[in-house]
Image (tube, rainbow, N blue to C red; front, side):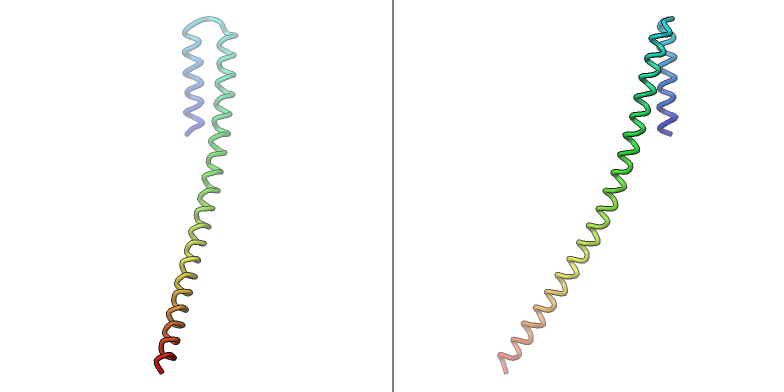
Length: 93
């Protein structure tokens, strides 16, 4: 879809330039620049997609690590509670 929109823009630009004057050299230069810009834009879009995928993977890993850390905190708090309970019963005996 992006490629189609870009190509449509190139065709529209070429048509506009053609309608404005008969100088084919200028038209050809503008078309080549437009095609180069479209290619660069497509490459940039692909890079952005790859970066987004990497960010999603990193976010998933961070979420898993955070969940593991929360579990560790709960286990540590439980152990402390049991230790305090054991100490409290040993002191009162």
